[in-house]
Length: 171
Image 1 (tube, rainbow, N blue to C red):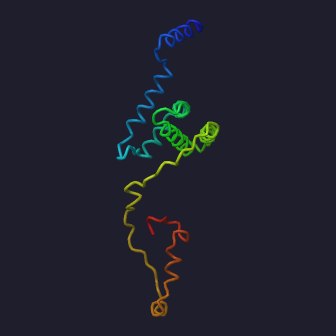
Image 2: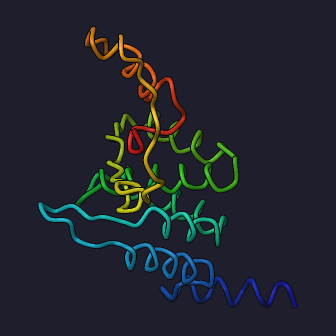
Image 3: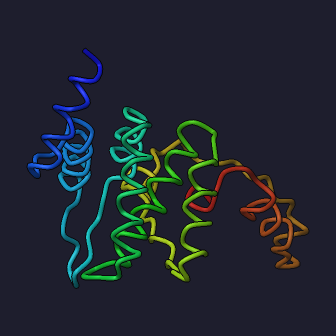
């Protein structure tokens, strides 16, 4: 019986029919394409949250997609650099989702071995990150002698993004 199954699989591959793995990979890549929205000048934007969720939902397909995309990048046809960049993003999201940098290391090693340099993708903060909810006014007591001396140093230090853990957006 197992021999019969592998014979059928080989017959499908010989006939040019994609196997189940190839169909699953094609479907996964189609789901990635569905997340993309044109951003002008030949670029696309992806919702990083939705993309991370997709990668998290199917780690095996994510790894297979990286392998497939790197094969296309190695061929250096068409928009090969976009394929390489997408593989880098998938690997990074895999690392974020599973706290496992194995795929990231592998993608980087494959790119290095083939001499492909990829510009890191630009991450645009979401509207919520750009406009955090109003958490009310922050009270900052200032003594009268500081005001009279026009001494802003304590204010600058107190509201420095490095001094606080608020992040630049909140400051």
